[in-house]
Length: 217
Image (tube, rainbow, N blue to C red; front, side, top):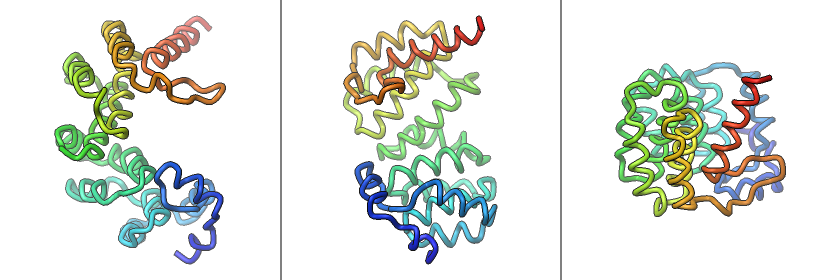
């Protein structure tokens, strides 16, 4: 904790706070500490218990994802205030946990939009890597009915799933693009030069173009 406090930088904090993350530690330096510490499950648990955002990010990097039971990731997700902690927890811990599928199903139906967003993030992972057994058309039905008015973080996760369905599944691509065009979610999202817009129709078109280019290269 002393080492993390010494890395606190006001400019970094100002940038992070604009995204809802209450810490001022450069993530590259945080990863360097994690690389030095390697996996330490007991330390990870103690770091998480501090309720400090930088410490929790470090905890995620040094924990052993498969060591957590079913209820621990659920409790951690509900405790995670900062978006970066939420995202890292889902991507670095829950996706590697043996209870990921059970949590995905439970979280999709959760009334808390942040928790539901985690369920959609796990669903997006399955859409891309293990779509067998998923009702993709049913997912599009839910997106079409609920995404427009969803809270920001849930909306972002649903939009990502919409785009991934369109990118990965040619038979549903036209419908996914049509939903994006009608709802116009993130249509005007500011996008830096060289980056792909998160607006689903543009995102889908660009990724499919890259896939086609790679096949003909």
